[in-house]
Image 1 (cartoon, helix red, strand yellow):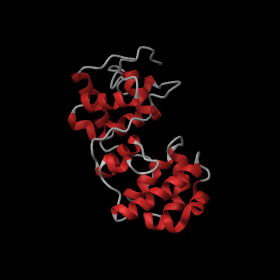
Image 2 (cartoon, helix red, strand yellow):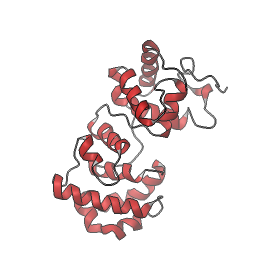
Image 3 (tube, rainbow, N blue to C red):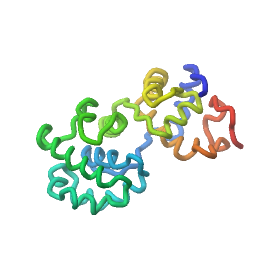
Image 4 (spheres, rainbow, N blue to C red):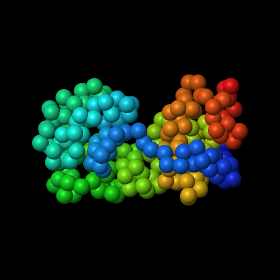
Length: 214
């Protein structure tokens, strides 16, 4: 685990991320808060590309909890059977859709506690929805962010909760809203797990990782 970088270094890292891409976007396709919630729930142990392939046709006919309930669990399974754990995920999507209709007027709640109370929605999923839809500085730590945070010294921690707090505590406030996407995209395409592309890294000179590649 790398050391926690100092404030000025952190500020320069995120200034560079911002200069390279001022408005980073998530890669899960969605049309509203509900489809975003469903897409993120389906993405557990699956790739965004795989989820997008499954949901493009699904969201044309089921973009609200009411329409999803009308489609039914078996109808949903027919669309998402290429995604891992599809039966369990379909069951959760139908259950959460029913809760949204019964308790939230068919709308997606905008509090972390309410989101996490939904079937199949953990803290990471809740944070993604809060960040991407309501633009709150919620930090959803996935494997990419966990790796980059520890490797670079941006947010070192032994588990995802510690890394999440390190981002919240140490990333300057003006960069908090987009920190999640800058870090996840950096981990997905540059600071990869097996062969990090250090030669193409825009923060190479600031990163605490000692085993840099060429």
